[in-house]
Picture 1 (spheres, rainbow over the protein chains, first blue to last red):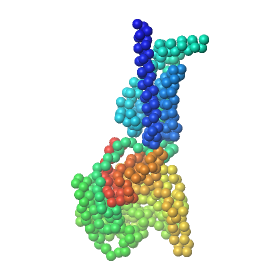
Picture 2: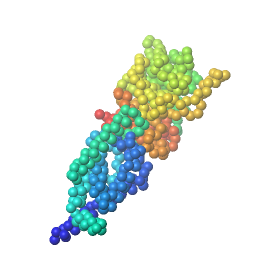
Picture 3: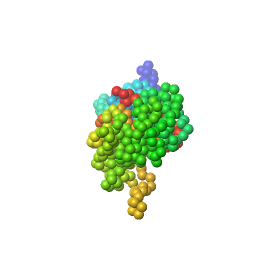
Picture 4: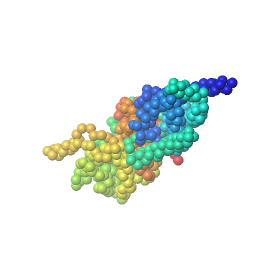
Length: 156
Length: 350
């Protein structure tokens, strides 16, 4: 019974992590595919315009790196912490733009284009909460325990 | 442990973005880095009108009407109603028609209209009800630019008789018409003639004259007594003119070599704002932008700050002729097309 619940929870966590991976890979690829537009949008952003040259590379690359970290089981914890940190930064960015900036620039490309800033904000907050949930449940999951035991046996 | 790491990450994430935001704001406002702020949906195109000829310029504008002059038919005035967008033309009649006119321009300021040619030099005034103009001043002083301050005084630009450099001045009535010049308003960088070229405007709201240089990122604001209020800088980075001038001693001529970079192209002013059309792309602006839009940078003349820019979209094939703003309308002539835009943003109206 307990095992069954553990397995179910494990599957849920796997699914949720896959969701995070898909989000970041999608976001990174859509930025890189239309790089010129992305660069122009960042250039007009009230928060980032002065740092455009770095930001345009840092953002998609770190998204991809985090996605890879999330895929590799051993780095999953680091991946989740990074994912959470980046989502916090994105969310702060949106709040800063909505509340403190003189004007609101056009939304980003890809999937996010169809979202308004407020929906975007809600989505980001949800992903932050999701990352927190994953962070605090990852340790106790069956997958981790089984993996650990499996690894330990292999070492022995 | 994990809880602590998460806390640290949260604070770091929020902190980094806020620091970025503050640093970025500084950069745009203080260093005037040449990056435009483009708030979305600031203008909406209301109408485009085909004028059939590319020689029209905007001579004046009220809440109901746009007045157009025509450089190839100098005494033709075209009225466009802002309600019906119907065109109506009038022929101006001057009390002295047989003069060697070379650079006639009309300015309409209801109830008056003014016609002047600084190469004669002569200045006429009439009422827009009958479009008949009488001579106000003749042979007072030659001038190369003029703008109406009120019904009897005008801002002018002329050549100094001592050193052949351009100077700003005023033509005004004191029993008869007189002129007054100030030699220290325009600042020479190369030759004092080509390099100081620009455009002269009068802002009714602030009661100030404005001179916007063509070839440097600068404009000056001064009062009708020719006292300088301040020098303003545009977001562009060209501070000194890149002109090459040939001084032809034999024929006593000066010639401009090559095409200098025009920093400020078309200009107009309204309320406390100065509108400058620039064809220079800022960072991160796509290269093909200039084919489909004119870039208009907006400055606040009360504090000399850059406010924001907007793109006036249209079929920009030909060269821009003139721009004009009045209340919430912005009008631009490009080639033979006249565009009317509505300034939508509440930045313009507080």
